[in-house]
Image (cartoon, rainbow, N blue to C red):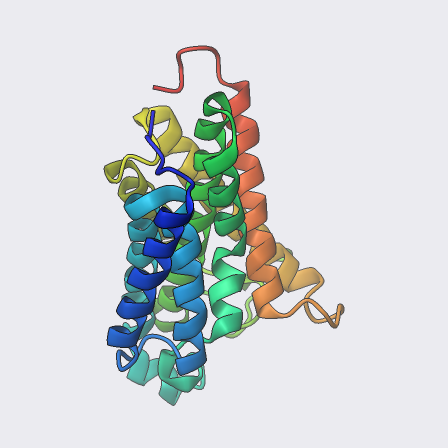
Length: 254
């Protein structure tokens, strides 16, 4: 079982100072906006404080991988009007839309009884697997998807349409979820093949649910911004993974 850091003032002060220093050094990196970096520093402090270096590294890995995928074919996506704004830089709303659910689960894991931690960490891992799956599917699908259809009707629609999917994008989503699950396993946040499969499956299913929400509700409900939908997607992934984990027979969790 993962040993979590002591929840005392010295540990949290260390987390704050380290993240403040790291964010100051990273400000010029074209991944986040200036405000985005400040919020990333707060997120990093909360994750380092709750889960230690491993939890922090998991989210850094997500940020790096997601940013690299966003840059793939960026010039072509920009020319087609499908590229992310601000040169692909993410702001505070993107930080919390992607990471709020995972952050809350990390904080809960830090104070929960040891027996409850594996399920909470499964949810933590699944939430970020879903976000990387979504990023991979969206960015690859917009650039290389040959036949883009609306998930609810399978009617052909232009690339970039809310709720649109493609074979290439869905395959990229599966790869993104798998990569994030392997990162989580490599860091010791999840253990065993069953946990890995649950995280991958929950991440991919939540990405498809996100597409359904985009196709049916997002244009009709004013408060359903992309960031809110992202948060709902990560919540769905976490709940699916944790619920499935509790249904596994004893000893099957690895």
